[in-house]
Image 1 (tube, helix red, strand yellow):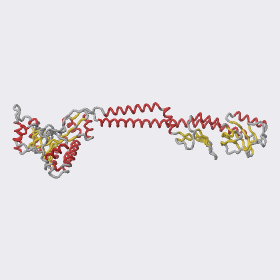
Image 2 (tube, rainbow, N blue to C red):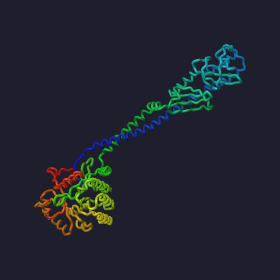
Image 3 (cartoon, rainbow, N blue to C red):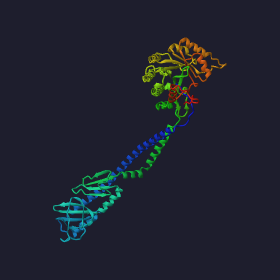
Image 4 (cartoon, one colour):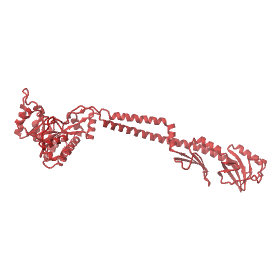
Length: 530
């Protein structure tokens, strides 16, 4: 297989768009990963801060409760005493020494009869009904403040109680100061299960972080919503987020530049094979009457940077990399798909010439491709021609001989391309049982030239007649050459005089025109894609 050449250095817009999308996806992926890591770190950091604050609040609350419990224990020693100035004085001293306690009171039969708020025992009419709920509880009471909840701590002795009231405003200020506007709740773990909250409601959604006191009387619970996490992230982790954006953007730009870098020939070849970018062309082979009786499969590659490349620029690399097998398989598959739809246009025994390289003689992959190709057509419809070239020497190894033997079982014929340009012409004819000789175009050009006689062509024709081998004249470009070759009874002709390599669709049109016996309109004989 060969190719034609044309300069083309434009990068396809679709490729640029594809590369831009790939680079954007990479940048987004990197940013997503890094942002996720930063976000998780921010969550853990905020949770640790909240846990530390809860521990601090718990410690302060526990100290307040311990102080109140100690005060009520001391006050309980006065439950048997008469409520006089001395008793109220002691209660006042207890309340004064404990800064967090608002008042210390003595209760009998659910009535407060003695308090640090007064200087003497309350009369029956002044005594206030007060029901003690538990050791620690919260309730409102008209005696203390009808509009505010009070925290009470009690100590029981028989049917009497010593209770201390704690200013809830102090606790509220404490929570607001330490919680740093984080929704927080304090639950008294008793039968009341009373809850005190700062910005918290049962419907609040988020991460709950709970801490229980040692005596299980208190539970502090914080609720961290997604909005709080993001706010903390923006305030405390802004720099890492910005850096991750810069890194992701830089990676995307570098990846885009990498994708659009000038590819080495090896990389470009691998990419072209992966994308199935090689396009097979068909150059007509005609008989002496000018009718199309076959075609040679030629391969073209439009390199993304270098344009159309000559076969000797990439075929050797395709052979050394082993890509030649895939390229041949792809080309045959495309040709088959075009020809199989238009079988009625093909004359029986339609010649289809395919080049084989030395690399393809090392195994049976080429044979399998040819077998698969021919299996799609009726027997005798396609005459497969396998072309050897003298420019690339094929060794007569056991594997090569086996390959050609199996190809002959498919009915394939062996042709020797570029005959006379190398050093193995006669040995090839003997080793591989050549069926067809292709006279190289360099010899065809000498026809009709006085300073370049056509004796070589005559000798080749004479040799072919002696060996009973058919001839294809390659590179016929004018009527003088054609007339001379016809006089020598050449069987097949190929060259620009008849047509350049054609895209399969145009080749089918030529066959259709021939089947209708319509001549090619003037000006369209070379209207082809190269």
